[in-house]
Image (cartoon, rainbow, N blue to C red):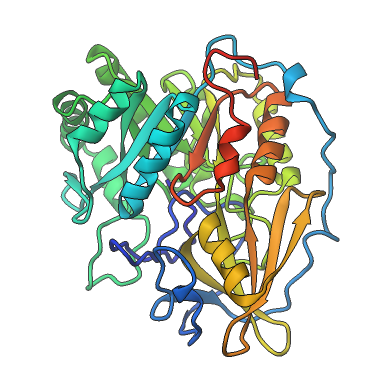
Length: 422
């Protein structure tokens, strides 16, 4: 799943230019290679940004707090309507930080119902391949089942590390070529079913991003056929949905135009709204998912007048970093910045943290040992709680978290075990 900007590169075990579930509804600036020459990568877990930070042309950064609109009314989640069935609490496990993610899962499994493993991708030939550094360990699947939870396999159209394609990125053509050919589509669906059956996964989690409006009918037909085949095998189908606040907005042409939420809801077991990426390295600094923006996404869902029971609100647990020059202009830095890494920035560099409760975000400002300045927007338990409360107050009681491993440990105090009152 992805918090990726358009120019995302590939992944390594200790080096991530990849922030995986989705960039949202903000248009990015033009992209250039950026070598920050700073030591911030030494302060963040699992990230080396010195050689490969993606950036935007410098521009004056607006203040998202002063520009905040549509304030969210406070709501008590205990009084909110929710799903009639036990709520879904899904976590995504990234292969590049899998030991820490699985440790978090085991510590908090009583609050979790589903685990989705980021292990597989669709290659140029239409085959399912395992990421070369992924530890696709069947013992992890057994561990999930021993906790009476469900295990899903993510299949993405984000390629593995390729030195001949250093910019990586989500490969639309791989998905389109598969969907356009009856032979290729049937083979891919057979492969997906076999993957689930042979490895004892409970379901398949499709994360095909960066599709276009002209792919919309093909994608719906593919999902319909895949859903039937998985159902026949006793397996679930979960889909990653790009966030959107309206239909066919040019500002949200990030893959959302290819996804007809109303029709997809007829086929999928779960629909994961990747409600993050409001701001990302290719945009101005700002919250990853403000409550105002989340409210507009919920408003779009409400406009469809469809049952919300299958919809799962994706909640970010990460941070984004921008460098700031002497003229107060910014450049975004791509990386897998988690809460614990952000707190290390703060502690190592005497950073100043601000709690922006009015928008449901946190902001950290600091200067590194060379005097270079940075702004970080990040999530913690407090911002997560505000998003959970807002979603529940609008009838959405299912949640998915990108991603576990390095998150604020207090996050799990606000999530009730399945079967207990919210």
